[in-house]
Length: 366
Image (cartoon, rainbow, N blue to C red; front, side, top):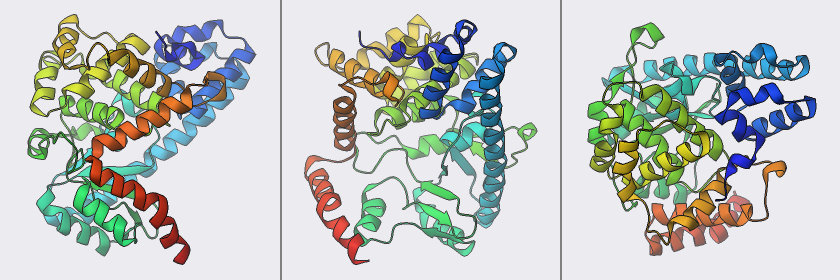
């Protein structure tokens, strides 16, 4: 079966001890692939956690330590920004629920170590969106989308406000009221996500800040990857799922309740893909009973080989050394699929026509 395991980076992510057999050209190849996949800082922590950092030759070690410095600075800035957002929204009486990278980092999860992210995602009740947006604007946040079509696109059809940027600090925030667009064929009930959110323990230094519960955090990571259409950082996102599975898999009841929770949230298909590809790519230890329970929710036997071919090519590092002539076609097919899953056909056709022909004219006239 076609597999991203042919890349050196995937081999090391799955089996860190592989680095003991690398010569200097091998290290250079590994670092190039890691940088292209945005996992350079993740790699340094992975090697450290496995007691391998002292085996790294001096030159590659310098690159890894530089990546660690960048990651530590990123973590400090993210923590500061989360604190400011908490302060900005304090008057609303809402829990600050973080999603994705910011949630991993602030909760001190292994999947947050070395992970870089470009914005801070939060989840709020839909009926609080106006209040949240006004509070953020009062404190210097502004929308980055001024085109009337884009405003309508986000506010009518999507699961989030138009992205906002702080005018002075330049950091970005995405305010979500759900984890899939209003127009998607499945609609995980946000009330279930909000009700199960878990406060970050005070020892992490993040008082009054929440994340999704472990099941929902894993499922959100899965739906973000397998319902989306962009795979530039697909390998990193798949490794997120691997690290979440390793961490939460030790909690009592995590594996036993995962499929039932996915069923309740209408997310069984992305769960199937997540379990299939983390086990095949990284050898993640998922209980056989969980795999068997998720198996009926996969695609048909005729469709599954095609999805394997597409996903496993798209989940390879985006680097010329890992590329095949099929990569572009696989990524384009998944891009179309991702948009297809977000909107019904007529609305999707209108959206693509507008973005292809009308938005460029609007931008030129601005």
